[in-house]
Image (cartoon, rainbow, N blue to C red; front, side, top):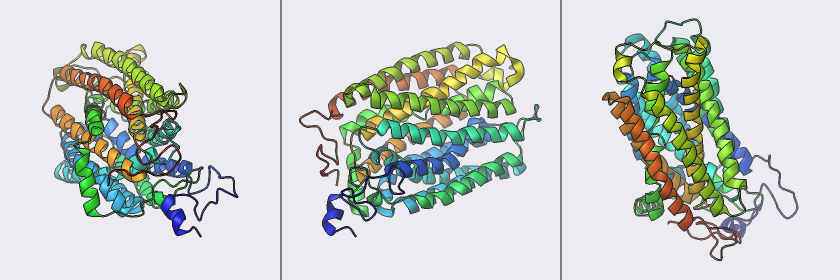
Length: 472
């Protein structure tokens, strides 16, 4: 059994004695296995939620219920995203994830109810509860994904998680495609679609119980992912308040705000406006599949392109900036072909995947939107992960990121519900992402250290592996 000194230094463990055994990548308490497990939890819960949302209007004809539910969702998500880091440090991952995952099932059930009764109150309440749950889940996920890996392979682990998670969106996209394949004139999905989502979400809720506390997760060098086995409300409240004065977090605010702001536009006003029901499901298969490709691409750049970690970060921002400019430029070219009145007055012939060349252009654009989403978010997560190594610290950083991100999303869904012109929404999305790039460059230059720097340390871990104080 590990000694008290072992527990305090984070060296050694009852599960692995690094002095006598060669560590295995596939041991249950390894960072790799735990990141894979949290990937499958997110495959089942937010992955299926993404597939449901990606159909546009939550699979319904009128987007009002989905817009209002998502506004409620992201409003509470903004609050509990920020608080989530503290809650995670107090409750630990199992209880945090269990509470978070269970709310996804309720949200899918609310749209099953809406399919029959057309009362949006249940969907709005379920959306608000899901916002609380999502804040807990995504904070726990962010802490695990950014703190468990070795500091020089965080991009690889982020890509691994993002690929597994978005495979849920791919599979989830097949559910409405298969369930509604012969309903070419239908405007809302059938009951079986929502039931299929609920089954996967229930499995993810149970799978969350397999996640270990970070104090039990041992890296290959023998260090623990945190030395803290518990926290308290006072410590976490003070630490969270200090985040709003941390210059590093302030530089991340524009990227955080932008990173989910575009979903309402892409889901409702591109996929939902241009394609028929079954094709919307098929498009989502490729949208979330593109996310897998995008995360692997940017993960490779952030980990392997240069020896210097700072140089890798700067290259990653540059690649995403170039790709984002090109993709949003293509989106503008397409957006000039139609506006909101064309959709409302049904002057647009909804495209089917069998329409050949007419279908190809908008499909490629939607695919590229998914590619950019993964590249942008994976890049931001890498930057956050480069600021610290300890789970306790990174749970707060990622919670702050998710909170600001969700506040932006709440505003975006409400903007869309007020019938803002499509081209204005596109311009806002493009502008927000563009503003974030130079600020991320400043953050990388000032806060991301290379291994060879004389002060080469990240918060929570020094070059020698000893833990240094974080925000307490």
